[in-house]
Amino acid sequence: MTPRPDRLSRLLALVPYFATRDGIALDQAARDLGISQTQLTKDLELLFVCGLPGYFPHQLIDLQFEHGFVDVIFTAGMDRPLRLTSAEASTMLVALQALLDLPGAVDQEAARRAIAKIEAAVGSSDTAVRMPAGSTDSDNPTFASIREAVTARRALRIRYYSATRDSVSDRIVDPIGLQTMDNHTYLEAWCRMSEGVRLFRFDRVDEAEKLDEPASPPEEAKAHPQRAVLSENPDLPSVQIEIDPGELWVLDYYLIEPLESLETRVDPQAPVRARLVYGSPEWLTRFLLGFGGRVRVISDSAIADSVISSAAAARARYT
Image 1: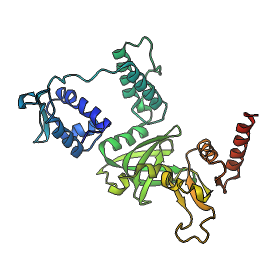
Image 2 (image 1 turned 135 degrees about the vertical axis):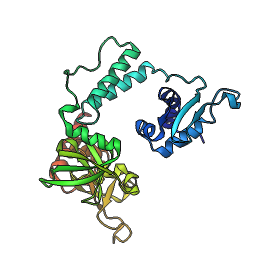
Image 3 (image 1 turned 90 degrees about the vertical axis):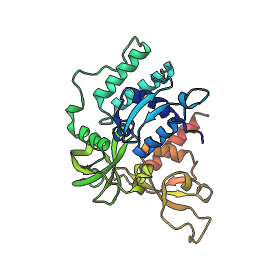
Image 4 (image 1 turned 60 degrees about the vertical axis):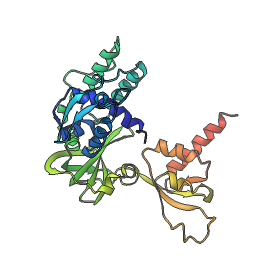
């Protein structure tokens, strides 16, 4: 089976990575690369049968990792990472700049160092990022504690303000990862109090303390991160919508929760009422406009008015 592009890119970078970190522990390497130790072992087993044309034993990449540490015996010439093209470097610089603009998404000092290295590598004559000296994540230890817990896979004790409930609560959560959406950074985690996956917006976490115990979210919770983004986030608004029978296919492509049983409804030709959680009013307006009135909001007059006015403005442009 041909490796997926993301895995292929990782495989190409593994040999130079280990060549400069000879003897690194397998679990540490997995953390650095952001993958599981099981996946890293599979990658190394695949590299073991790759090498120079001819593919005789002495021409194959040789990495020893049986005892929990990785030693490089033969690199087959893959001693340095591939160089970035100008387009690739520009894409990375734009992405890093976008991450810098999101509160808490990354270690800002590390991101700025990465930007400087990319600019130096491609010979940029201007700097992509100009930020005040000394402006680092040390200014916000809460954000740093959250990221450290995610990286170290440790449970977190947080004090969190829920805007929808207008209340503050203390929770212990098991981090799964970080999400960015609508210009905000969220901690995706299994909430032990709610017994479900929740998203916690960084700027609403008043306090965060990394605990010594390992994070242990249920396996099924880690398998569906997008569901948490749209349906399990306590801070995102929701609306009730009506879906005409001819558009019920949206239930298979969007995380929309029907409010009635599709199998037992009396009139198959009647519209279906459902609940939709959305990230921003602008997105919801665009979503509804795409259906030309066949999917419509019924619980929020402001959104309905926005759809009507946007549709009228679009029609006016053709006259």
